[in-house]
Length: 575
Ligand SMILES: Nc1ncnc2c1ncn2[C@@H]1O[C@H](COP(=O)(O)OP(=O)(O)OP(=O)(O)O)[C@@H](O)[C@H]1O
Image (cartoon, rainbow, N blue to C red):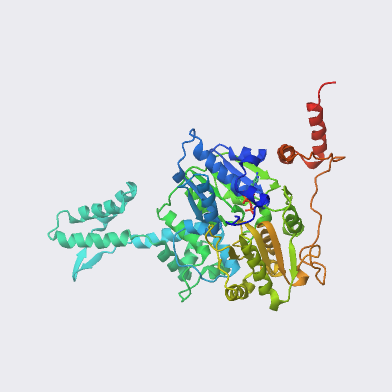
């Protein structure tokens, strides 16, 4: 994302087109046949998103698969992310693919309703699908009750219940459309009457009552406004406390929260309104999605051909997880699963990753950190500040990077947002809330959640201590925030929340960034010097990367020296 006018920076330049450096592991994933569910796990910046998009490009280019661009859907966590994936695929000449945030796929509704975290979590559970299904069934049964008499223009029209029942049964058995059902009812009632106009009007009125157009938003509002309907649909699968949590009566708040959107999708599905489906679906940052979101995604897949991407060390929010089982359980597919891990960190320079990796033992102890493949242009800048001076330091750093032509993320917790916005305004610095194209503002202001999956030349992370404190998985969120930069990282905040190892010394040793060694691969007995020729060095690097990926993917660390010995044996000329 280097901006026009930026200095020549070979480290950053290489990020755009890496066709020359595709590792063996990435290449294998890119060429995975479409009849599979490909699951790509990997640390930040290991190329998961790019690899998945290259898989899409490959599937589109292979005539054997005959896949059209409009048959592919790429889903990510945010609108900004969807812009990034669209820009990348289009830069490779693939237009027409659908790119969307998860919410952008779901039915439209006015959201913004505040909600307690335990309610959000409950609404994401898969058993909500059962509740919605039963509520709709009961709703329909009420609508199906046939009134004995209808009043049309002041005249009573008596209906023959047997005739109406017959029409309902025929319409259901033949899966008749709304129009056909109405015509069937008109024909059945009008036969042999003296006043056909009156009867036809009565037939239309009855059709509206029997088969009203389904409005998922109206249905869900009615369901959540009625303790009676909720209890009836719960059928013992929800406790009274849970029903209380779902019940919201009728009030003035915005009607829906974001957790309601997958419920609206479920309601539409149960009532027969089906979304557009795709021959291949890519789901990025899948580690955070609720079961109800995953069900909604699954409905968009025509055949179960999927690429599912994520990193358990970055899993946060109400559905933070430690493994893939739960995600995959809600994305059923008959196709074989191919589960792979990427190990090389291409985005984040060594100096930045060393700092971020200090969080891993707390954030995700079972996750092995990626191996960084390059050095960065600068060490991270650690800036201890008093609250009063915080915004000025952040904005000065952002302005410097922007003036040098870099894209800049200011990643800040909610409680500092207003002061940062005010400081940006008072310095007259243009900024946006989603990374722009090359003509957009260089500075993007983001919450740690919004920063997921994005990358910038420089990142300024504000008050790391607040980021940790404000979320049950705060260490993971901070890890995500620290791993957005391809070149420069600044940490600005209270000295007790900053790591002691770099730059200006804080007064106290670090609290939240507990230092811990990064799991190290066994070293070869003696390192031989690298040749001076840069071309040769790059070739050696690529071969070494490819071999390393094969080792990492197939053998446990204690067997690596054995395999290397065997390799030397195999390639050594016979004596
Ligand atoms: N083989 C490679 N050689 C050079 N650069 C690469 C390679 N693979 C990926 N990259 C670059 O590394 C950067 C990070 O890639 P990407 O965004 O796909 O990572 P990610 O694993 O999805 O990260 P995150 O978990 O943070 O979302 C991108 O700029 C991408 O172009």
